[in-house]
Amino acid sequence: MKKRIGSYPRVRVKGGGRGVVSQAGTVLLVETIRKSGLDAAISTALAPWHKARAVHDPGKILLDVALAVALGGDCLADVSMLRAEPAVFGPVASDPTVSRLISKLASGGQRVLAALRTARAEVREHVWRLAGDAAPDAGGQVIVDIDGVLVLAHSEKQNATATWKKTFGHHPLMGFVDHGRGGSGEPVVGLLRPGNAGSNTAADHIQATQLALAQLPKRLRRGRQTLIRTDSGGGTHEFVAWLAQRGRWLSYSVGMTITDAIHQAVLKVPASAWTPAVEPDGDIRDGAWVAELAGDCLTGWPKGLRLIVRKERPHPGAQLRFTDADGMRLTCFATNTAGEAIATLELRHRQRARAEDRIRAARATGLRNLPLHEAAQNQIWLEIIQIALDLLAWMPLLALTGQARLWEPRRLRLRLFSTAAQLVTTGRRRYLRLAGHWPWTDVITDALDRLHALPNPG
Image (tube, rainbow, N blue to C red; front, side, top):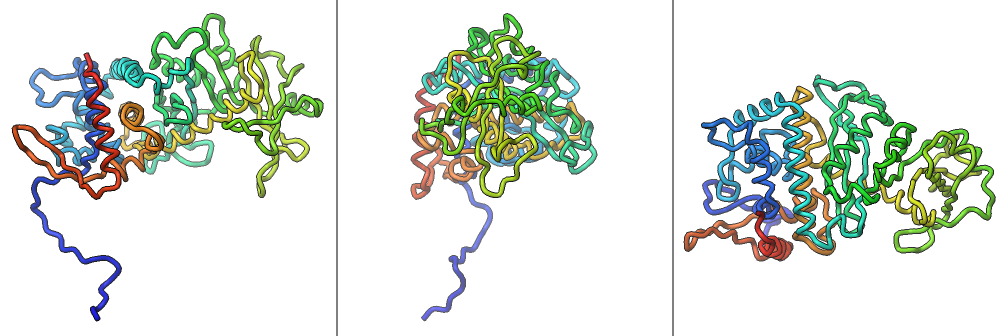
């Protein structure tokens, strides 16, 4: 009988191995950059900040940092993961060079931000054309979710202040294009704000919406092909009036705070006016009803606004609020979409909860903290996060199918990007041989085949 030495086999470790590539699955993101033309677009955008005798291109440096963030990095120094694999990622700048570039771009102010955002918008339109029927605008309408995010700061940083949740940090306003039930979503705006910025500041919501619209193809900015969706933070007179302004051609679905006027209007709704709420599959949602309000509660709001309220039995253990009525939890939203059943509109607004999934993915992709001291530097970091999230959304959009398209960044890193491979050079070509026993090797190779089949940019 052999003596038991533990639950796992004992493996001795030695250094000095050759021909082994870690994080080999990241070639999916590298190929996405190549096919989307993101590398050329970012390099062209940052050409004014490229010194004549500089060894490293600013666009390549910024993309290297974005790749490191996409792999789970949370600071500039994590670009060393890429520097260790020159056969896959090419020459990677040193940490001091990366740091100097971020400081230089931060000093460029709005010129740099405008250049980066314009490049991303051009690439986004190209990627959506490549995606075809899987693109977010394939159904004729694009949905943009805008929501605030609290980012904690653990040291003194510029514009880091006390937040409304009694924490300390920043309060950026983010916007994401919803890919629907069959996909994830991609960022279109990241507006850095101080920690004490209000959740319902209309000026910030207007600016965030303008930046988000600039990221969309121009054809989607008319005919109400873009729906702006927010929680109650966007339910202000100024923001709704801006959305409904004549000639803007936007659809909106914004959450509303239950005021006393709305509460009194709900109490006057007859029982026959309540319609059962529905689920995405068309089934009736148990214990939930919707109704459309009219009367004095619409006074002062733009013409064409529809106010829809939902009442629902609270889940066990939930506490009712003062604004609830008859033991039912009340929620309310406003929309300017006409000709649709209120149950359908309520379901569409309830699906705004997918924005919380996008925020969770952003927190896992560099937004857990803002690592730099100056606000201008952290705004550049926020742009890097958005580029990383773009890649994590575009790669599944172009290359993955089925349930794999729904994988969030953590799962993509665990199953695909962390794969190791053997680097083989033969016939002046380099090959990555993935482990045959890895459960998701076929997913990686099939995805690469789909990417290789796409036309080259330009």
